[in-house]
Amino acid sequence: MIRVVIVDGFSSGKFLARELYDYGCVLLHVSSDPDIHEYYYKNFDYTIYSAFLTCQDYAETCQKISMFSPHYIIAGAESGVLLSDELNRHFALGFSNDYNHSHARRNKYDMIQAISSAGLAAAKQLKTQEWMAAEWWIKHHNLFPVVLKPLASAGSDGVFICHNLTEAKAAFAQILGSHSKLNIVNKQVLIQEYLDGVEYVVNMVSLQGKTRVTEVVRYTKVRLESGRILYDIDDILDESFTHYWTLVDYTRQAIAALGIHNGPSHAEVMLTAQGPKLVEVAARTDGILRPEISARTTQLGQISATVMAITEPERFLALTESPAPYQLLNHSYNVCLINTHEGIFHQQDFVTELQKLASFSQAVFYIDDGQSIGVTQDVFSQPGTIYLVHSSKDVLRRDYRTIRQLEKQGIYLKNSG
Image (cartoon, rainbow, N blue to C red; front, side, top):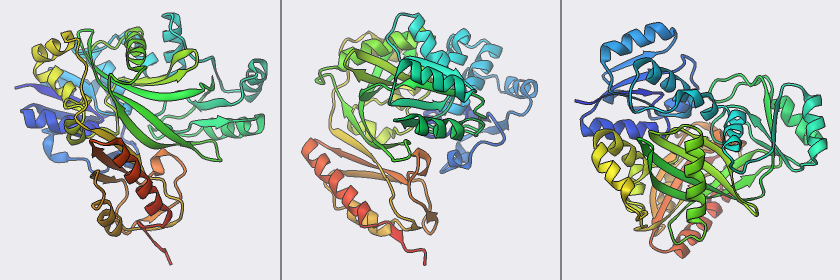
């Protein structure tokens, strides 16, 4: 029986854990911190784990894990990546990544430095805790717009796009000293060249340094007046997309430079006029994925491919040797909700209308019925994701427009008064 430790089995890690459990694996959950944001415990399934630990003392945690005799230790969410690396090193397990690059897989400054050192194109950047240094660097490079963000965060948490020094100074002050949603104090601010282009996701799963591409996705994002970024649409692509192999080849080099040899990787890559440039890579599964959606689109999504790499390694390695990429059974849009008015959340009328859409597949809400809801300000206040799947892109576009129109009408809101 395969014994797997999952560090912070949140986000899409919940579904990874579920598939491992369904396969027959015995699971131990480790929370990397006692103060993990409650956002991550939404819909967490406690029943699939044989035991739970919270890492407050590293030596004690290792002692308790040793009694479990793990075969695998994996991160379920971004917050678990560093501890997962530490534990893999401690227990000398084979399904692990290069420990010497562990910090670079979490720290966005070191990440870009690492791929630049490997000869890959990347953004200009600076990290500092002093606004004067940031101001000089921005003026010296004449980089507007410019991106300011934490050194370690998830998604677009704390990411600002600034068009002048006033905006940049305000963003700098807001980031420095604040806590990220990963409960990390932002002791420095990362300032980066704004990459002008279209952003893509390249998801892979690796085993012994051999990779399988599971998703290539085109992002559409919305920029607020505050400079913050919201997710709008995730649009799954296949080999017929002109730049598919350009993105895949670049990403393979990037994850190799960061020492990712085993397990999932979730890369965000900007395709600029000069070619692909990395936004960031995470050594975990893509947070928006749902196995049932993957089954209807790519057939084998990143979550199931990760499970296969653990439970059926020979079968997975055979897949990595196949030159044929995945073929889409259907197209899909993951539509991220953007709320524009305050009120009380009620999903019933919205779900009724969604079920009338030809492409509607699934609705996932991050807020409960009857709960107060504010205007969406960042990725963590987006109230949900609607998964659309259909053979026709035209149908997806039509249904997407309907969803946005329903939102404008406040269909999932009831007046708080």
